[in-house]
Length: 303
Image (cartoon, rainbow, N blue to C red; front, side, top):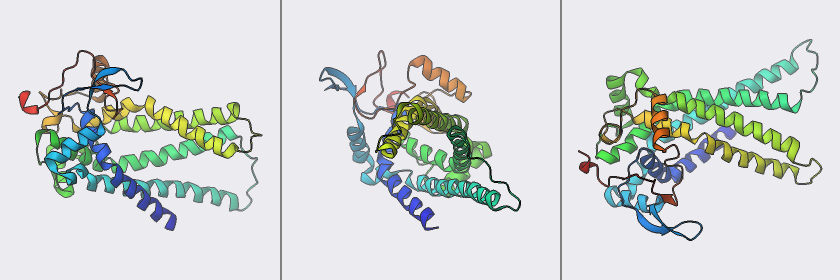
């Protein structure tokens, strides 16, 4: 119990600290660029035309809504984080209790120790089920979080309170509205998890020398590196999921003329791929202007 409480507290603290970063990231993902490009330097020192980074973007939001405005959507995101942590922990705890029951069961013959690869598959499958259950239950809060953030574009107040937002979504879109963008999000999580654990297993088994004294540290580093690599590869799923969560929901930031209406998440994927925007919002620094792309600085110019 204390373990779960500490995880919830730590997760909530990290959520609060990272809220301004996510707010900026979501607005960039939907294609909102309120500030004009500037001349800057890339990591090699060359002069390039680039879009404002995280701090300039956050300063722009704070100049309009104040510093408190940077924490828009925090309440549903905290609810999502707390509920997700509890559900994830409960599912894994259930599997642990099942394992203990099998070990202590009457007449149970001790099984041979499974190979490390079988153990990776078993643990990854359980983690996948736990994460999927948490994602499924918390996705409605994720949708509300995204929509409350995207309101900034059209200066709306449609999704303000948690309960009011739930009523609005149910009245306008029904139950399915709470799960907009769920499929690509689930697919991205599952692919990322299997890719990360598979790569980590291959690196730890075949690339690292088991005789090294710092073997445990090396394995933890390899897990972090493969996790980062997997998240980079599956980022398009995150982008498509977030776009579908706000698409055609009655907000200016998710409707024409600012954004097209997608018939499905596959339609959204194909459209982004055709435009070359599959990595939009992936970087919050050194943001170069896409070739042949013109951003509108004010939504009113589009109307």
